[in-house]
Amino acid sequence: MKEKTQIPYYLGIDAGSSSIGWAVTDTMYHVLKTKGKAMWGVRLFPDASTAAERRTHRAARRRLQRRKQRLDILEMLFAPALNEKDPQFLARMHESDLWQEDKSINSKYSLFSDSNFNDCDYHAQYPTTYHLRSELAHSTDSHDVRLVYLALHHLMKSRGHFLYEISETSDNDSSLRDKFDDFCTLLSDAYGLDFVPHNMDNYLNILKTPNMRVTEKAALLTKV
Image (cartoon, rainbow, N blue to C red; front, side, top):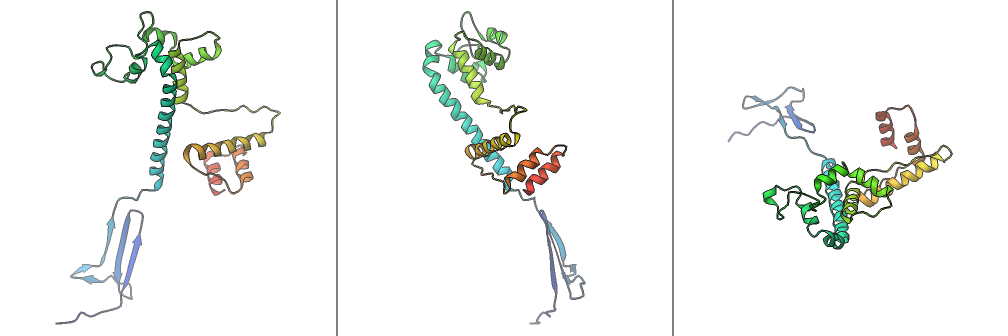
């Protein structure tokens, strides 16, 4: 049996994020051939995904889970008073997104089904939930427990964000540091993220720098 002749050769590999190229040459960098075909080529494959997308989905799942827990606790606390006022109120609310034929309660209304007050009257009096929240916040009169529940349900479901006014006489540096500490605490408590810049003073100075584009500021903050 004839032995194959072995000659020195180079194997070059170019590995990318979605492809890998290769070539075999001799010591003079001439592409070698085998069975009449040049020994070079490329293999393409789908891009690798980073952990950022999985982390985003995981954070979203946790956020939705915490929101559901808040609303479940709120419903548990209000259930006795709501059932006493309107035994079918919570059931109508839970089935508000179903077609009429899929509901277990024979009612065309989703919230209020009283003889003198229904959903039409409710939306006419409170075009949005913010109108209801405003009335409850500024009125000293007693209100239907269902209205109080709807306002609190909206608050706990859509908590929004908090903006703090800083007076001209306040210490802006101290106030910003306090708010930033609160922000870091919120990240740790709500999402389990520990965010502590290596140089806090430099980080806050970049945040306060005026007349700087957002992309430039983000690049500097990333370095810090």
